[in-house]
Amino acid sequence: MTTETASPFAVRQAHFPDVMDFFAPGLKRWQTEEWQPSNPRRFLPVSVTGSACALSCDHCQSKVLEGMVSVKADEDLYALARRLRAQGSEGLLVSGGSTRSGGVPLLPHLRHIPRIREELGMKVIVHSGVVSPELAAGLADAGVDGVMLDIIGADETIRDVYHLDLTVSDFDRALGLLAERELRIIPHIVLGLHYGRFLGEYRALDIITRHPVSTIILVVLVPLVGTPMAHLPPPPVADVTEFFRATRLAAPATTVNLGCARPLGPVKTELDQAAIDLGLNGIAYPADGAIAYAKSRGLEPRLFEYCCSLTWTGDSDVAYRTVEVAS
Figure 1 (cartoon, one colour):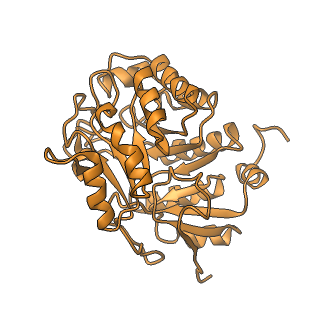
Figure 2 (cartoon, rainbow, N blue to C red):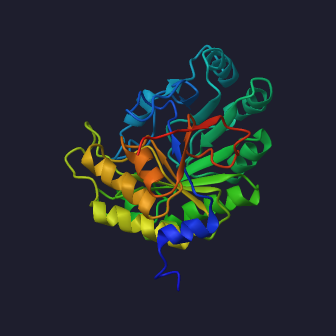
């Protein structure tokens, strides 16, 4: 059986144990009848730029930053982390708005990360954007637990949606810089990013599979109110699920998760079931019923109150519990 004709679920079974991981980080208030997280502050997103972003991308317009905890003018990243640790947080996603060069201005904050990890015992992953050699080196020296960045596979999307004077090769080069520093890389692909339609997603996948990445995260465009994409429908479900299939087959031994962003309602249920059927490894904020559905497919559910990027840490390093779901 060739890769092209293989069952994605069978490919998954050949490379991974029969478990399905579900994630609920503290990025938003969330619960279902199947799962009520015990500590919604366990893993929180932090913005080093507040709500400011130099790009004002058409799909976001800085609205994603508004839901993050901001580093205040009178405190540094360590002080913020210490305050959040006292409130029950165990990990941080350090992010922020982009500069005109496509990267998040993380360099001034990296000196605090070793103390956050060592003294506070917190996990720290960063959303870097397009990295420079200097930033890649700084991230390695700081000992971050992982680096997240969106990979865009169409020059038109980079120009028209992100308003960046970059090309696809710059994103490819960023992955190479992170790999050279032996950083744990967690690339994201936003499906339907070009105004609700697929354009460069398959090229992005090809680029990613040529680098030693830890986990591939797939998210789906959700047109946000107040952005230039607000009036657009999300990408067709059939296009999204076919990309699930393609990703599993293109990266048979790499963890692939369905991330936080995707449409709500019946579409979310359909996508989550497809993610399970097509061999993905994990789902963030699962639709109600998804945990039971995974169990019906012979997969043991595991629940993590962490970001779905934290997949490498292992059972001894991330608190999880196996749930009993009525059949």
